[in-house]
Length: 312
Image (cartoon, rainbow, N blue to C red):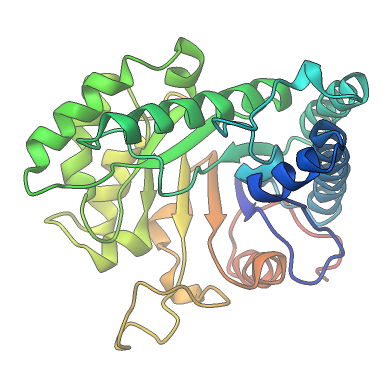
């Protein structure tokens, strides 16, 4: 069976995730207030909304949810970072993490992460690499707490010498904890690294490749979609994860890299229909609305998806 994935946010459902900034936290400290109290309330709110997100996914047969990287605001900040067990309501926070894990497992909802683009393992800057390593370990912490099984990143920059950049990725990968190494995946992008560029890295480090077909169409290599799909599948030893999106202005528009609010059914590879199991993250601006729309269209087209009870 295939399942569709919702990415991070909602546009219509009343589910919102909060954040804060180091600057605001510093003003609290200057006023003699406890920044950890502020952070605790935000984290507790985010976990409660994550539970609501899982309820939404379960009731609409959405089988995967990508968790927002800002679940724990400024956790890795050099001045205002913190540990979970130092928070005033740490016990309740850990209980909510456990509740998220239990609910996801009960409803068979796959949880994943996709850190921001500033996570660059192959940067020539040691400072950037160190920040990236800290950020990936942060994601590894949350993934362990909630039972997520993927932390997906891009290959990074080319820096005028992609073979050397790939070698830096390999060298810095071994600096990650075993936990994060086992969760890490890499995705072909629309500007630098094609699937063919990344496959040797994936085989060398035993990293699964998240095949983004939209990126492949924007930055093609010598592979067809069918060939790319087959090669990507061979890198996985668990349920594969692929990405789909449609261009905002169509394939003849000025910039096909920009994502549409919805998915054009014609953009979904027919080659994916018989892959079982498979998670397909829907990367569209209309979020849950777009997932439900393409879900209905795929079911009507004979795809083996869990059926939303609202679909007649």
